[in-house]
Image (cartoon, rainbow, N blue to C red):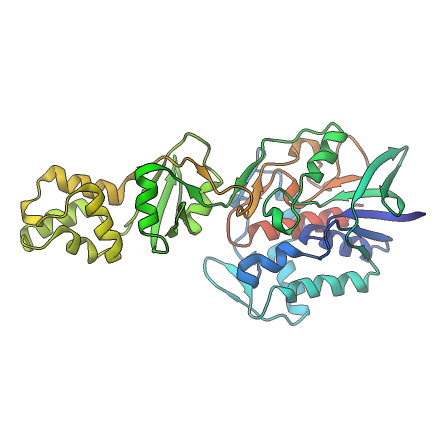
Length: 393
């Protein structure tokens, strides 16, 4: 059966829902096709089930892309304050957790229900459990074929997301569409993802699994000062997830386990003041006891501090303040929060999100080469890019 729509949005995630709502407001007849059985699954699981739906400080500095200026246009048209206004309109209670991160007081489902309600108001049709078999462009129309139907439309919006978290339905379908239309896709990497290790450093991390500290993590001139958590496979926590977006295979990272303290100076002062104290006990004044013991054990330096040489104290302080480690990899897409890279921004008009080569074909959200930092920025990109496409389809 053939059915006609003005707009078909592929993907019922954050960007796709926002686009459909805005297109509906312009009296467009809109269909969303979702290949899984649920709407907004990534919204549902985000923020520990409370959805970090935006960040009050979100701006272009919080994003990675081969063209870091690409997202400026979308953010100028639809800001975090615009989305906050929508949340307030639906009387959803929320709070700032830290660093401008906004979370629902109750549940991420509040955001999903808000978006579904807005879709219903605009008479947006949503079909679930529907896989698209083919997309054909014929003159100024697009024909999408599924198992049961053929849909004709003048605009197709690809809001398929990236490769992250396949257990909730992530797929490479958006990139396949790009390839079909000979559009460039940049290299893809799991991002906002824990880092993994081998050998001695892995055993060190395993022995500390579950221990968390505030740390500073650095690659070149990029630094993040947030929590770090030791795991059975390596290290995680906000600072590590953030730096993972900048990490490439065979490159090292520098970790400062105690950024607020210069341990070289402190240890030399304590050698004079408390010479009979064990080094591990000294470190326990500044670090979790288990971490202090693990460091002295790994470095074989659990002796009285008064007996320690300058080189021994330097070795300890360098380990704490300038730990240079070489990750062997990441935990991959199964735990990555987003996909780094995507449809090359040179292929897309930043003012409309429309493909430059094919009128009526749009790409929005995570499938595009725009990747945000941790903390609600990726959702804001979804809202902003979705809004812009919805205004132009």
